[in-house]
Image 1 (cartoon, helix red, strand yellow):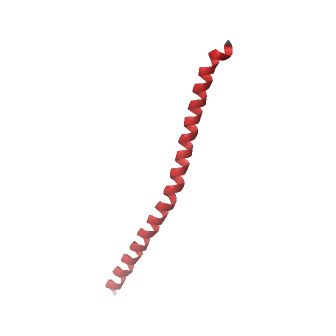
Image 2 (spheres, one colour):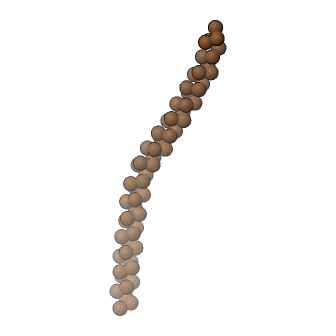
Image 3 (cartoon, helix red, strand yellow):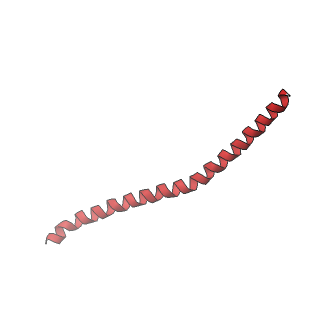
Length: 61
């Protein structure tokens, strides 16, 4: 009888821990998919900035 009373509580705990787990896994997935993308765009912008700097330096000469 006690088990039947505790069962909903157990299910709720299980569900909440599962939600937390899925949330953290989602975070990791988004982190690992976004990081390379951000690094790529960052290097792309850095290249553009370098080109612009070179162009400005050549203009000054």
